[in-house]
Length: 110
Length: 118
Image 1 (cartoon, rainbow over the protein chains, first blue to last red):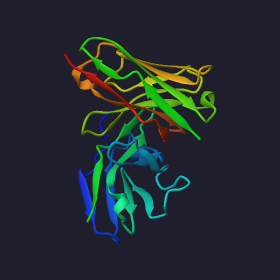
Image 2 (cartoon, each protein chain N blue to C red):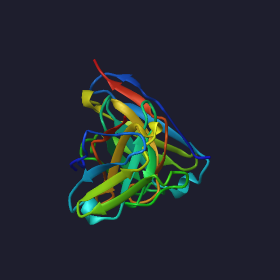
Image 3 (cartoon, one colour):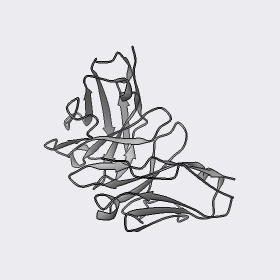
Image 4 (cartoon, rainbow over the protein chains, first blue to last red):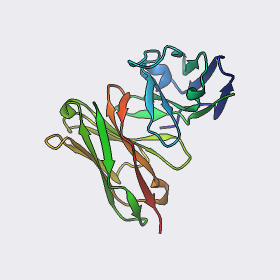
């Protein structure tokens, strides 16, 4: 099980938009609609913010959106706010009841 | 409200065993699969294991297969992770998380730190 590939860092100014990519293979991201995204602030547990590629759990602002094309999923954060500064992780179902995470992206809000 | 509380972490020597527990409340524990996910210091998340709602099926990451064992007691609303033959590279915060289908973890505990060191 190889980790999904995410850029180590991303940044954007307050009010702008930023997109984080998550690249896998046809055996995980490309093969299933089960891609999730998690937000993790320092010292805290991860929080689910996107599931099934583009769905938002209750309470997650609609500034967070997800998409997928082929073997790459993407998370877009629009209207960046200071509290969006955090680490973001993707994960994907990888068949046979296995799960794989991305390496994580540190988002900085300038 | 859903609560997951891990316990049992600590410092252990390489090669020794250690067990973690995760006490669940606020939902029907016996209806959900459960994951263990770990995070080494300063590193990303790594999926460790999954157990089905009834405990009949268990799945492991290759990195822990044969050394770690996931189990649950639905009568006690508790999830377990028995870790044997621990290695320095197993040092991490271990989170338990509720599975909401196909690897989606919708609720997480606060984590329990396991340090493997001589």
